[in-house]
Length: 347
Ligand SMILES: [Zn+2]
Image 1 (cartoon, rainbow, N blue to C red):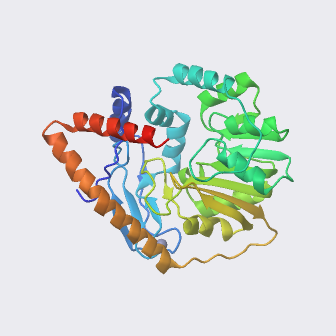
Image 2: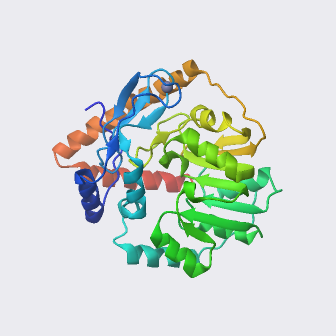
């Protein structure tokens, strides 16, 4: 019970079906991680047994350095199948099938209006924050590569300010959208990239990958000037747990992978309301070295655990109790009504 992750999303019937199928899918292969990928320790402990969709995915942490990661996790082959098949999109976005996903995305992008960059504001998440952040820091770049470009909005953003762009994305459905809109994108993964680009972007992608040291080697080969990474991070609280995330980063653990390679840090910051970490790095000729204070990292981890298992455990007990007596939905409705009222008063 203590390891149950209880921030569950409300799922539609169809999403529930996809989650059930996923949990029962015997074709998906998993591999166990014996050593922490940062400090090589075997002192790995269980944090959660499920993710926010109810998928049976275990999340662990390294008790020596505070690194948080999925374990066991899908093998590379299964991961590839998972993304290519769009199961990922069906579960997370609740789309019904390929055609609906295609039509909805196409419509969304046709209505999308890119804007010129302005000063970044880290108080609250907004879609263009990454764009404001990058352009506020650097301007001497021409070619942009977006790895895992998803719907392709970032490609449209950079096209709008006159950059040469390219995207790569495993989803075939999204690729159909890119083609329809004339965006320069290919179906594929990071290993399929052959050319070099001034600015390389990975937005909510790095945490989905594996063998991160190898990945950063590839990134340093294809980056001419700048590397931008955005990940769901943890600074004061745990990031939302989902099966497709192999890693959960802090500033330290993210920098461990990037700064022990041919990169230096230009700037990192985090969005205050959701703790996404945005980091911009500059490519260097030589490898640099970055060692973080494991003691401090563990302290931070302990603080987050306390917060989670303390304050939120109360919520869990109350929710479970209400669920048992069948009043959970009514209480949730009242709670949301009160919350909305409160919000309206303060806006
Ligand atoms: Zn470790």
